[in-house]
Image (tube, rainbow, N blue to C red; front, side):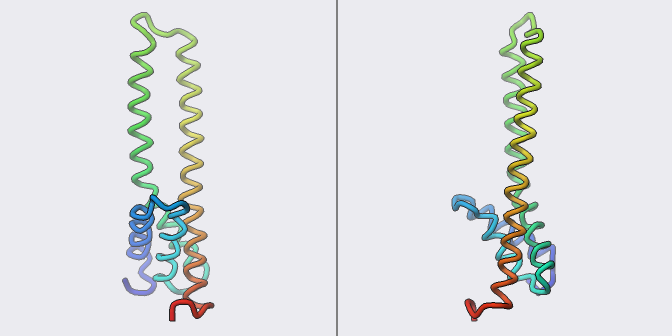
Amino acid sequence: MAEGDTLINAIIGGVASIVLSFIPLSPVLGGAIAGYLQGGSRNDGLRVGAYSGVVAAIPLAFVFVFALALFGVVGVFSAGPGGGGAGAAGGIVLFLFAFVFALVVAAVYTIGLGAVGGWLGNYVKYDTDLLE
């Protein structure tokens, strides 16, 4: 947990985000922990916070892949034995569009809020008397 050890601090912040995931905006808290531990400049805090968001997004990606596999199997079996024709193809395209949109929104939420938290953690470390 040395100051400036980006990988370790990002992992700590990402794990904190995952553990605190029952709290709204938990990536901010994980990023703040990572940014506080990182030290350095504001850009260093921002970077390690974004990395902690990436670490926190890994379990989210597994959930999305599982959902895609589950709904893909359900969609194939619900098309019937003769196939679904154009209606099924349109449904699959719509589902994939919604899936990709949700994945992008979740990634922006997790990584973006982690970066904001990293900046705030660095700010708290150097510009406040909050944790002295």
